[in-house]
Amino acid sequence: MEEDKITTASLPGEGKAPCDAYAGYIRRKRLVLVVLFVAVVGIAVFSMTMGSLQIAPLDVVRAVFGQGDVRTVAAVQNIRLPRVLTAIVAGVALALARCAYQSVLRNPLASASTLGISQGAAFGASLAIIVFAGGAGASAAYGGISTADPVTTALFAFAGAMLSTVVILLSNGLANG
Image 1: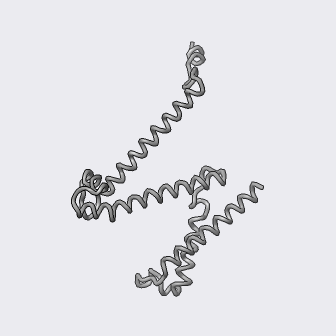
Image 2 (image 1 turned 45 degrees about the vertical axis):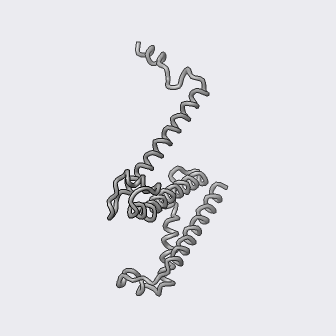
Image 3 (image 1 turned 135 degrees about the horizontal axis):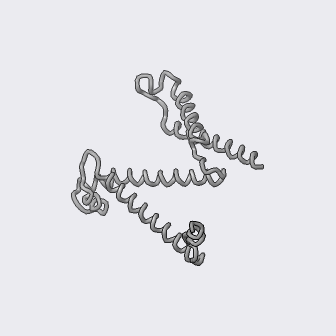
């Protein structure tokens, strides 16, 4: 009796043509993308309401399109909207970078921190601060003042990250032969 129930039970997608199953899969993917887009827009609007100047969500939407109080429009368009857009673009870039790591290395757990790329960037930045800022006496820990040039620090951090990336990719190429 139990065996009849198990063998006669239909599986999800069984009895459908492969084309229909794929169309349903694509429909679900599109729905997920729409829901995620709406969530990002909602969170972005909500984050633009916070700050020293409290703005209602409807006023934020109006200010994005240049409508409303001059002070609100200036705060949203000149300060809050660029910050939110920068955060979204940075998040997309980091997600694409992780996707590239996982694809190239064929490892679903690959990320900048687990591969050592973040540590390479930190080493490069530390090197720039110590060498070009006059050593430990000029560090931020000593009197709260740093004489390190932020551009030099960023360039050294980038160079350290790229150097560690090259080492990882070369070692992966040698391992996979």
